[in-house]
Image (cartoon, rainbow, N blue to C red):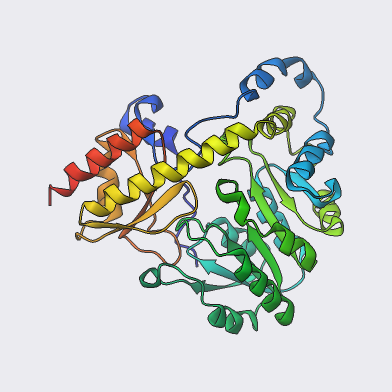
Length: 359
């Protein structure tokens, strides 16, 4: 059973508990693009007021067309949703079977969605001592008893990336076992060249989930989508609630896709800052980072302190990290930090060095 469904990004609740404005807290618990929304999004949102007097486009036609062009696929292969979490909860209700396999550590909503739809859940827990690498032989053994596989790539919260060649092997293992493959690429925009969307589409027995929350920095608008064959897309759209994607979200999504320079600038910045932060944290001597392809780092404490205790200490600095003890497969030693702006990252690194000296 999951150890809880608390997520990062609850900065408003934390601020209320501390009696301070939310603006006083730098939130490293939610992994959102620190460069903010793409240029043009703010203007589009400011100009959409009159359109809010009408119902949204139920089929999100223009957004689907833009997403299809972005990925080089047909618009009939795109299903737009109120965040990828909506799709995570829809899929177990639509797919046949009764036993699901989750590669862990993983996003808690997979299990939550499966349990709500009366699926049995099994885990393949990856080993931190092996840098969370995915052993295909162990996966094959587990798949023989399962009808559905959930895998996040890059993984959340570890940041580990399974290469496209290995995803292709996993597709074959799923086909042999008769299991449907749900590949969650919520953070893949940070390393788009590693996406396995084409492999999953060719297989006909899989779906790719994507989020516009993280890379495009619009979590408050709730926007995600799926890439799958047209038949499954049609079933998802029929099962979803009408008008689940509001007008502002659709317009922001369209504007987000228009600036290629913004995307490249984001990827360069995240790669450089992630590397710098990892080196600085590792140099502390009492913490270890894991290789990440996303905009966050998983950190293991090695000084006897718990992540919960460190989180409380850092809140005194106005900094909030993600305690990862409630991720299946992790324990009290692990926490996650987002890559934020350089000056914010520097604040975190200074605070970590200070708090480490207290023990």
